[in-house]
Image (cartoon, rainbow, N blue to C red):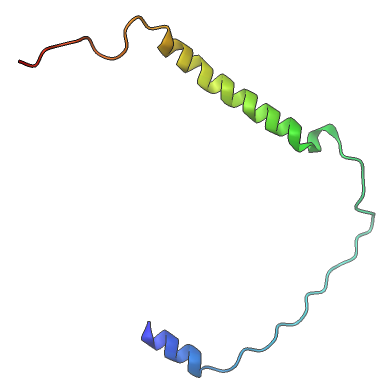
Amino acid sequence: FVIVMVATGLGPKREEPEPIEYAETLEPLHRERGVWDRFGLWTALAIVLVLLAYAVPLLGLLRLERFGSPGFQPF
């Protein structure tokens, strides 16, 4: 750790990076969003799938007549 700190302090000064040049778009970026590009649709679908995934096992557990193992006395 000490070697890294000393080498960082004594090393050459950092140069400024060159600016990044970006390409210009060929078509405008504004377009109509389709039904598959809507965040709310995917959120609703995820909630429905999670409810379905958890509902079936929980309903199966709640319908059991007895939870866990049968009662016993250790002594």
